[in-house]
Image (cartoon, rainbow, N blue to C red; front, side, top):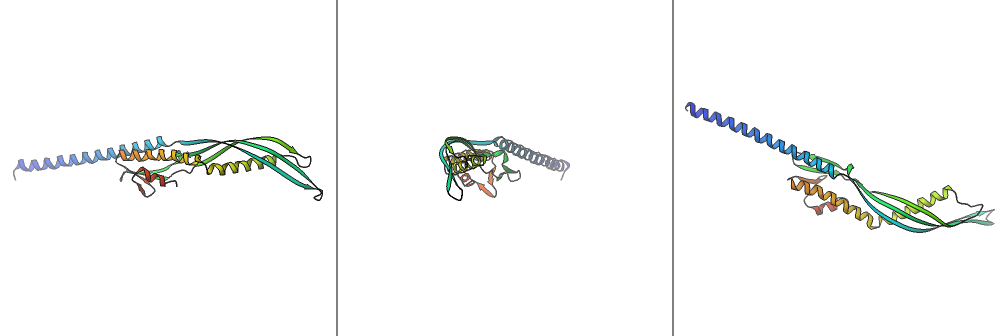
Length: 204
């Protein structure tokens, strides 16, 4: 082999090595840029989702006490009108996720549970009470706890919870669109999310 041929082979090897290094470096840079963009977008999506509802309910409170060896009773009662504001919150700032750069996976590890808050405004009408059985702070706390529990039960069966869940699904779909557009895969724990419909199963 002459010097020209040997030199050509050496040059070809060097050029190939430089090209391979450049391509490898470029791929790493692109992968790093993609993962940083994924993380930035996830953090931007992370926010507090709040769904509000308003409820009204009328209660009647009655209490009787036996006095003097059950020879007489002492009664108290009131008409209670409750207007309550309720909120259901998903705090996506508490979302736990992992970015797998090597396999281009965005892994949702834990999605926050909904938080139901109730803010009751209670008004009392037709209050009647006896001297030996009058309303006190304990009664008002008991009434507040009771009406809040009943409203909570009503809300949990209402559309408010489902509406808040639908808003959650919209945000999770944004993650799917983001990863799909960048050639990444969205996962929930160990399950691959192949279409937005699969997201519906996450918080069932």
